Image 1 (tube, one colour):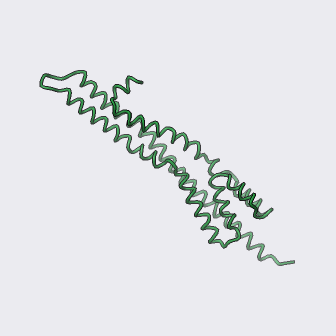
Image 2: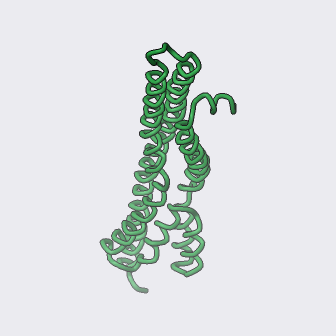
Length: 209
């Protein structure tokens, strides 16, 4: 491996640095963006059941907020359950923007690496071409310098593509995953708002004994 790095020349270190940054991001996002972490199954139903049974409490809000991004959105809605529907939705949207920002964490960096890796490989190719042209003099061609220039050009191009392709695949995958999570959390939040205000309307309409 060290022989390949030496043959690729100094431009390869930019690509190595990019890969060192990209790999932890991919691993971290794979772990963080699991569905169970973002949208726990049946969370809204559990929260609504407890809310209808015991009513609003600080304990309920705290416990709900601990269930990932969806839990934080639901907790924001429940905290304003007694407020008008518009106020409740605004509170949910405000927390939703914060949650969306957290879900997008590091994705810009990963997308930048995916876009820049081929350019860094191209930069190495240009450096290799300079070496190749420099190997030709009036006295003839220096075979060692010619071979070194070809190695720099090809290795950097190859490494640039090797880094860019998986980074782009994971970037697109994570982006689509975040967008699907956002849509589903919006749907769950609307279901919460409808259920809470429907229950409130029924209680208000019920005749006083």
